[in-house]
Amino acid sequence: MDRRTIWAILLMMAIAVAPAIFLKKPRGSAEAGKRASETAVPADSSATPALLPNRDSTKAVTSPPPRLPAESPRAEGATEGTVRVTSPLYTYGISTRGARLVEATLPRYRSMTPAERGRPAQILPPDSKLLGLTLVLDQRDTVPLDDWPFTVSAESLQVRGPTPLRLSASRDGVKVDLTYTFHPDDYRIEVDGRVTGVGPNGGLFLVGMGPTLKNAEADSNENHRALALVTKHSETERTDLAGLKPGEPKTVSGPLEWAAIKSKYFVTGVLAFDSTGGAISGVTATAPSTAGKRPDRADVRLSLPLPPSGAFRYTTYVGPMEYDRLRRIGHGFDDVNPYGWPGFRTIIRPVAAGVRWLLVWMHEHLHLAYGFVLVIFGILVRILLWPLNQKAMRANMQMQAVQPLMKEIQERHKNDPQKVQQEMFKLYKEHGVNPLGGCWPMLLPMPVLFALFFVFQNSIELRGASFGWLPDLSRPDPLYIIPVIMGLSMFGLSKVGQVGMEPNPQMKMMLYVMPVMMTFLFLNFASGLNLYYAVSNIASIPQQWMLARERQKRTAKAIVEVKTRSPGNKPAKAKRKA
Image 1 (cartoon, one colour):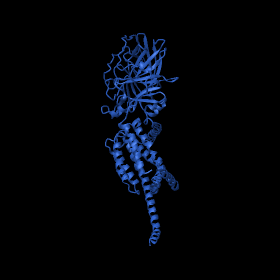
Image 2: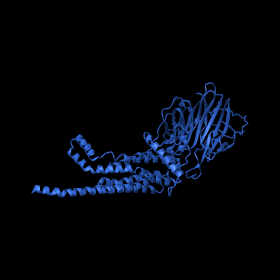
Image 3: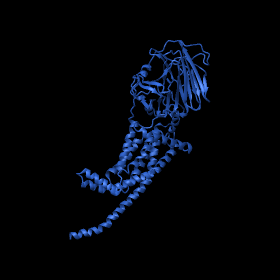
Image 4: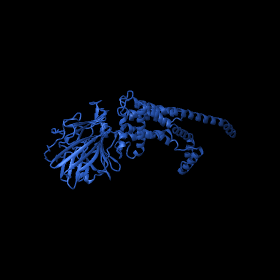
């Protein structure tokens, strides 16, 4: 494989990566099931029965607080009438109006937004509807519970072991009992409930998940692009919020094992399983009719069948997208944070998962900053691929050696393509040349580069990791120093690689054009990705230099052989002329 082929592969790689950043398109969901669309309640629904609250309560909260209007801002998520649940991992806020989750503050992760930089990340918006309930007893009796005053078993909780919070409310003969169970070392909340007065036909529960996740990143546009509804049936399906049409419901039919709303690094999900697999019968997402072309919020509700007994159970996850933690949950929940594009994920995802694991392992066990980890990783990859690259480069030199003979065959049989092909195969066999021998070893580093692209785009472990002048390896270099170093390293590697080769105007042009093009392409990529690529290029220069010297020696040897043969041939030709 000659140099032009290598540059062509790099160009294709650049073209493949660029759309993920600049031309990302939303992916729609499957056709909706009739049941989910029939039972879903639109975001602007006002079908709230005029029922009087039950005042007979001896629970910890004896008088429910006044209801807050939906548009009332809550800077920190906690308000009057909020039960705060605290552990080392989180501070959750449960509203006594509707038993909704209105706060999720994560002390281990800091907000990157200019207004809240350095403060613990709070990932729920002020108008959170997460875990808000709507009871559907039949097609005409829909009862929203968002304004029901719940009595609670405690005004605050400090979680040191499995800790339950009990909530209850009743109206017009319908009683709802809830138990939220929290764990100190887990972001999952177990929800057990029972509805009294359901009737012999049972019903449905609509569980709120919207409207969005609060931005906690420095780049709000990038976080906006990552906002999506992800569901799991036989495989995961993603629907970008930005791809929803305002006012038009988008439904995903079940049964589903889980449904989640994700941002770039955080996720809220509801997991429900039964003997058949998924217990969620469908999910509906409706962007506000006033939203623009790219909505960043939607009324999202999933439906859970409610048996005549009135008992139901599901689990909620509210926290960071830590790959290992999501994987331990099972049921493919780690796939809520996808690595790779559709069609390529089969190849990229295992590599990305392995790369992420190795980087985190080196950071935690070798006690190295992620910047040093990337430097070591880049050198390590080049050392491991050294024999394969050596083989590929020598195969290229063999191809260059037979280039004159190939041109001669093409000229001799230019009117007979089949003969050209036969003579080419014969030439390869005689000289021991494999025309593909230089290609596949050069392709091996590319899955690693693709994998790192997605690792830096999705792995929360690298979020906020600084190195030198780089404030965040998962973000672009604000000074553009590392992309320039990467471009210079690419130029140096190419320059050394052309030593000893015949002058070629096209390759000389690519020597200057390709590094400049790749530098501009990588300007807005993660600085950690640029750091790895630069180190990888620099680590490849010694091998290129050694092979360039070998190429020069072969060329010099060929010239000497030609010169030593020519004196014997020239006199003979001269004698025939005489």
